Image: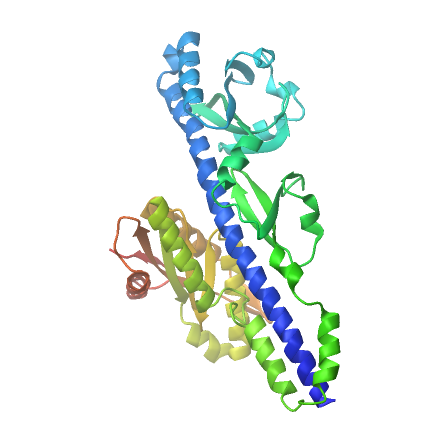
Length: 428
């Protein structure tokens, strides 16, 4: 019996290990796909920002010919754009190209039930909103990026960039196609699949991830086809019966080893956050991406102020619950694209991607400090928990290594401690 259990656990472990490796490969491929799509999308969103700035400056000198000339120039230099339109208040007033789009002129967004909610969301939030993919008024399918224009703090009008969905996605993924993987994308709110096979979202052993788009989210299902070639559990059971005649004494050892390798290799056992090993992987990816794409990213080192005093006063069981609650608050207030990890004890590290300046990091740190102003209720105890944070920014032009970057964040954390705790410090 012991021999049977040994071989059963061993073969099952090997199968699950192979499944785990295939899952991690799918996760890495998903990160690559998301990065390529974000880069392609960002190049299109700059169009709206530029035209908005022009209108704000020359709002009193706008002439139809001048606006049309600018739209013509923007359209001719943009990829995947079907048309660019400007609405004054709520009515579409300018569009390019005009051919096949004349029916858009004069349309009042408030009269278009399918599009008005996203238009209103853009106005109310004062931020760009990506709508779609949807069926367009002028025919066909596309995504519409709507960017509200405010002049002297008053709503002036709306900039709309219609993106050809098929052309955009083909270009975004042209350099990262891999026959080993299949993937599908859908909108998170409507669950509408617009790329790939919708059935992927219903299959087992599929990696699911989310990505953020302006005022919305997309969901991805990524399949590693290699998983179909792995042996099924039935074959493992048959081999277990045969091999159990030879060896069985080490079943318990391999069961424990299986658990350690498959469950505990990448995640912190207390909080479920990425551990140091997974942090190193994601930090290396962020570093490579920043170097390749000439970007910046931020690093935050943080810990809980006076955590030893909490342990001493309430006991280690409450202390563990405090760490779990801190992890949950951090995770829920950090973007999906960023990484919150626990190194051990009360030490955490956060990787904040795509940061243009230190001010962006400071904004994130201030937000985190604010959310911890609310006491935690742990096992019936109301406990006030504060953080100290050390911030540093990696510049693509810098020769700073990841080891040096982590040290900079630690030094900034030490400065925050010396400044009285419950604050942040930026490494200089």
